[in-house]
Length: 191
Image (cartoon, rainbow, N blue to C red; front, side, top):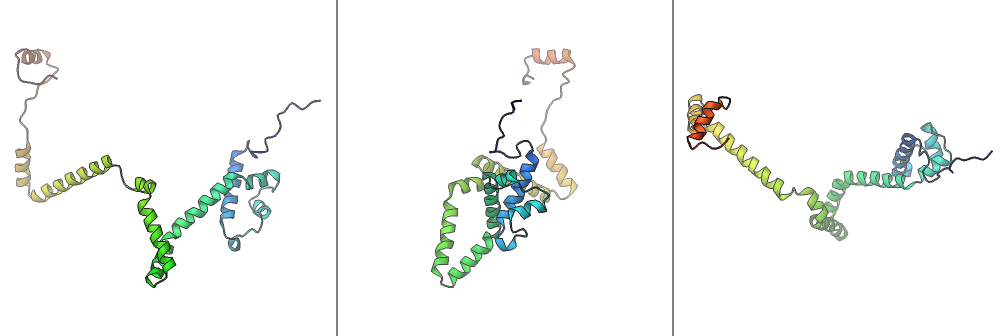
């Protein structure tokens, strides 16, 4: 009897079990991101067994996949970002004490950060949003000034009266009255 099944896709182990593949990628990437002395498990086989995974060919293939290395590098870079303030502070202190290489590294970082167009574009809000926020800030300031100036009810009432607009109310459901007003050529704007 001939086997008509398609050949197994060895490039994507656990293709039919995406949750298991994702779990393996996650635990292996985090394990690889640790320094050797901090690894509880000394081998990939030990790591798999501790997490209840059989360390078979599919496991090792996934553990050596590009996704694992990408996630591991992202994990390491994230830790590096968390440590950057302390490292930069140490560089600055060493530079102040006369270590020229520390000064060079520190100032190079500052220069690259300040001139990185991609970074600046992410940090600086677009001009339109910035203008809107400035207008909102001005409006809020004006409102606070008005609120302070109108501390008592009499002043508040007088202010509201001064800002009131004279107008006439027309009930549009009263179509006969509406037709009279609009046919007289009044100065009412069209509705």
